[in-house]
Image 1 (tube, rainbow, N blue to C red):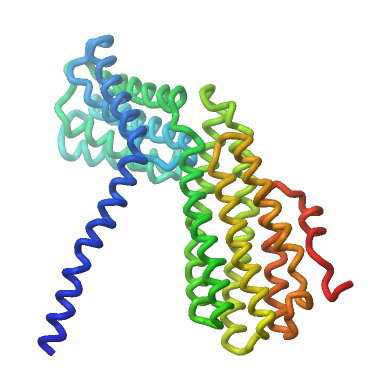
Image 2 (cartoon, rainbow, N blue to C red):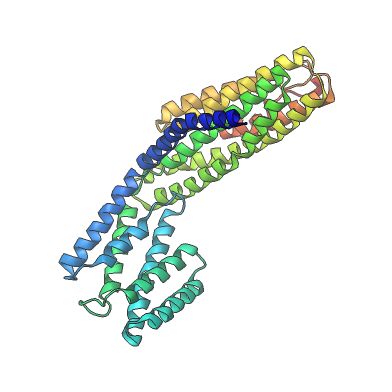
Length: 385
């Protein structure tokens, strides 16, 4: 027993460097991804402080810096302008309410209780967002608990307005590249999708139902990635319509949004296919011809998805179109083979697998820019009709 526990302990110790390395790489990735926002937040906070101190003549305008900092924050690309505006309003209103009530009630603990309660209730009345409520309550109670400003009753409210305006100006004039986050998330989604299809191909080739179940588990974990891409594209579209710096990329973002709509459907179909495949491999033995043709079709489909990922990841129009042509050719090649009889499939269970692959290929063709009619016509007639 003691030797077994010692072996387990040594095994855990050996995993420490691996876990530390993984966390270090993840932290480095987060840091590099958030570098632009960190610079943006720093410039906004320091700039707001300098403006309030030197132009308005305020002493230690800390609320200008904090308002700019919390207004920008580390936010996902989605709804970024709305988030900045929401936090800005909540932050400013909280300070205004705090200044007003402390002017009427005076400083003290019970006054802080009243200010916080009124601020939270007013925030819930104005907006149902958690960020709005938190910022309004936090800023108002800070106004009460900190020493009074020597610059006047509403000086801190004016500082907050300066900070929020700096945040909004920076978010509008110098936003992050709207294509960066969606492409990063899309790359992760494509990687997972190709692994699902590759696992399914290997499962068929090796008649391994467990590998099919693993593909299903991997497929079920892709939905957060799809949601992340969608959220990022919402914010990206917002930036391309609002910021003059990135309006030229509006068409590109619209194309990405259209592609992810069909890619989402294809990923959902892959989960259905993996679940059905695991069941079939548990109960039915496919013929050798069927195993070979189905496994090859899945492997080729995985390669086509990878080509689609390359197409969606590049910004150069000609390069993107070249990858899309390659993707369409690969998908058309797979589509033309998806007839059960031609694939050597003679069982009803095998036919069901092919029938599940057909709409997945149509969705991927539409993600690659093919019309639904053309994509559907690329499939061979069932039963040799």
